[in-house]
Each structure stands twice: as structure tokens, then as C-alpha cells.
Amino acid sequence: MKKIFSNRNKELENEITAYLNAVTKGGLIYKEGIREYLHGSEDVFELRKNEMLEIEHAADDHLREIKRKLYAYNLIPDSSGDILELTDSLDELVDTANHTLQHLSIEKPIFPTEIKSSFEELMVMSCQAADELIKGVWSFFQNTGMVEDFVTKASFYESETDKKEEAIARLVFQSTSINELSHKIHLRYFIQQVAMISDIAEGIGLKLSVFQLKRQL
Image (cartoon, rainbow, N blue to C red; front, side):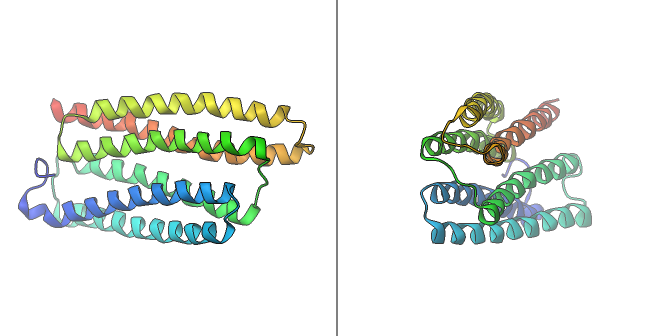
């Protein structure tokens, strides 16, 4: 991050690094949590859910510190607004992942065998969009010139997630093994929640492209 941050901004640089690491770790915990729920590892899933809650709290703490340091010391004034908007937006990824695991724990939806693999594929694809977005954010702060490449990939995976979301929703509502409409609607809710990760990632990517363009002007 040396291209943006000078030595006097070291504390802010460290806080942003810790925040991005927390967001990244949250994504990893989320993926493993979904897998463990689908494969019936209830005890391990509950541990993941609790880890995710801790990560959300840690990310919130880092975000508050980022805001405090930017305002208190008037650091990098030309970019502070963009950094605040970017880091605030990333918080939505962590919140959505945490809420999904919490709701799985509370509501305990039943995924029929023929749905599980498709749902896991949806999760992996949606998270791939977020993974590419996070790479783009790192590139933005490190000024590697790769921001647009990662944003493009995030947008691609969001589009693929949309296709997969529609396909699995059709599979659920056409299924003869899921008898109750309420069960189908319940599954659709979680399908939408998992797909939402890619929607958020694409939205942040659009902002990131604008911030990168402003830097080049």
C-alpha cells in the first residue's frame, strides 16, 4: 500500500489491512459453514456460525477505527471519501454472510439430496465474485494496475450466479419430492441469500471502477 500511504499514515494502513483480512477470513468461514450445513455436520456448522459472528464484530471494530483515523487526522484527504465509501460497502458482504449462517442455524431449512450439490455450486460461484472483488480492492490500495481485471471477473461470476440461481429455483419449484409450497419458498429464500453475495460484489466493483478512474484523472 506504499503508493497511497506515507509513513505518517502507517496506523491507517495497518487498520485497512486488518479489515480486508477480516473480510477475507469471513468469506472462507462462510463457505465452509455452508458446506458443513449441507453435509449434516451440525456441530461443526455451529462453530463456524459463531466464528462468523466474531469476524463480523472484528470487521466492525476495524471499520470504526478506519473512520476515526480518517476524520481525526485528516489523512489522505483527496481519497478519504472514496476509502470510506469502499470500506462501508465491503461491510455489507460480511453482514450478509453472517446473517445467512445465523438464519440457517435458526430456521434449519431441509435441502433434499437432489438440491444440495446445485446449492453448493451456487454458493461457490457467488463467493467467487466476492473473491475477485476483494482482489480488486487489494489492487486498488496497492496500486498494481489490476483493478479493472478483477472487477471484470467479479461481474462475470455475478452473471453466472444469476443463471445458476434461476436454474436451481426452477429445480426447486418443479421438484416432485418437495411437496409443500412453503418448503419451496423457504428454500428459495436461502437461494436468494446466497446469490446476493455476488450481487453485492458486483455493486462494489462498479464503485471501485469509478474510484480507480478518479485516481487516474
